[in-house]
Length: 184
Image: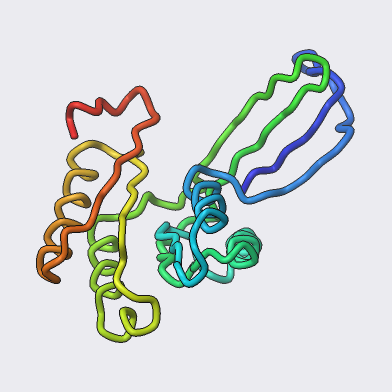
């Protein structure tokens, strides 16, 4: 969840500034990407978000799920992973310069584990899920974790699709400089 405060100009350190506007929105690459994807898909196609949440009863989790579902994103594959709250970003946006400063926290919510990803794959390829949603056609991984973890998730996808006699694409997005794409 993004919490955005718009200010006329950045406050001085140890200063005080009243925000001109405040808004809360679903943020993060996965949330933003799935919302855009459902707008580009043909009717009858489904885009599902697989991500960890602290607990389904968390107010920010409820807010994010409702927002995503309003766009048509399937949230049935979210994983309760524990933690204090949904990962959040606090964004200070300056009207004067047009720049923004982002401070993020995971709020104790862990990244998606390999075992949870494998459970989701098994659920996704289960007979009832296939009857309801059809076969998956693609998997996209946001590479925020260490390369060995992402590689294990990629291998799990390939193994599960091979077990179904399918050859389905897998894409990896690497945005953090700390993750070397060559290591994947």
